[in-house]
Image 1 (cartoon, chains in turn green, cyan):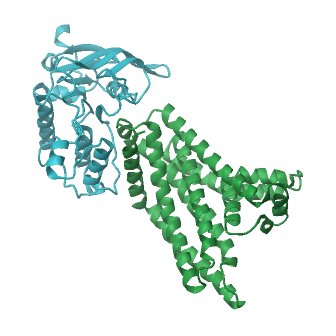
Image 2 (spheres, chains in turn orange, red; image 1 turned 180 degrees about the horizontal axis):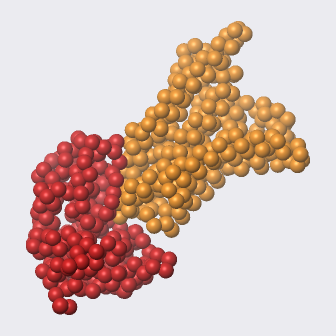
Image 3 (cartoon, one colour; image 1 turned 120 degrees about the vertical axis):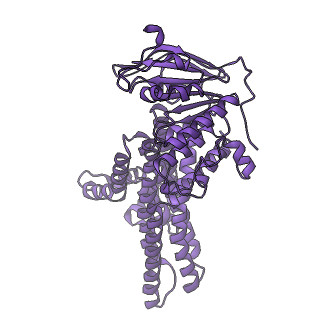
Length: 276
Length: 253
């Protein structure tokens, strides 16, 4: 693979992304909401005479599981589809760069944009935490950040796969928003609604979580923040008894890695088989 | 470090070989058994009415679409790892991203081709266009007119003087002055031994035959996906159905 060309594409995509309104708007909103969530968490703790990130953690995890993945999946969906509609894709594909190299460059560049957004939001939270509550809980926050970065990679890869398959940019963006809604809310609601009726059980619930990259990311963040599986309630007790906390973390990591690999494969096949 | 390919092929080498290329979309035949050869230094016009298959032919040569038959550039399949990067390509329509500047566009494509354009001398060497042809490098693409954007895209196609240049209607959106500059550029390309296949709509070739004769050696006339004439540019005569159908070669009068 022509690595300098891959990095050139990555730099180009990052440059285009950070100059777009989607990234700037999301980064700004995400940072403001992260700061508010951190301040509210610290306030509720100080009212109780305690310190730490505890109650704020839930809010930050939910933010990390909603904002960056939405941005990542939309950026990914916009990338190849926009390049195709603008006839930039043929211009790229006659360069000394393979199609797999081009897809890799696009993903790396867009992941950089998502990571910047996560860095702004959680960076501001970390500074607040360190200055008000000390540095003891910053490690937990950094673990959440690490998990959020991983979820960012998955979301961009899924978005790029959608772009490679969709007929138009509008279709790609619509599909990406629909899929994000499905992962972020709809699957949870369906599982909550039917779990008892169909006797899904904790094993079925675990499979449902592994099949949903955002839910897998959420579980990973909870576990990475220092909590053990028991924090997840009765379901956590099941995990603790069957695979343990480390096993659960490995399972959700494997889920995220599989989603990323499959998405990149679909993106490569899409860009290879379709005319640019 | 500028990478240049121009010295690679010998003068007599067949730089482009198109043999028996056919292409269909559903049941519509777009190209039907097209064969064209270009030697190093040949500049050929690919002429035809709308829908005659010119753009599809260029896309086949660029390795951007599947087809039956064979295309070789310097002996390599343009879709293969060896063939990539041998071609400079200007699509018929291209919308460069608006938030970036002219310099950033040129710089990006130069990096892809491992060409340095940091110093003015390197830039002038890598972008073989007359002075003043390109807008200011600091200009955002979004602030440029359609014609100026076309000139930037043309610079990208000619960047680093690739062995084969494919230009799909390069004069589209250019005003008279810059069309003249384009001819100068193509004349310079010809003088430097460059090789190019240039798709031109029939109407333009009919109107500009004398200009084009100074730019191109040959005109290949496509009609409904078939080569119906391959000869000097002057051998194409104006057609009474200019712009609506293919002109006939003189030999068929």
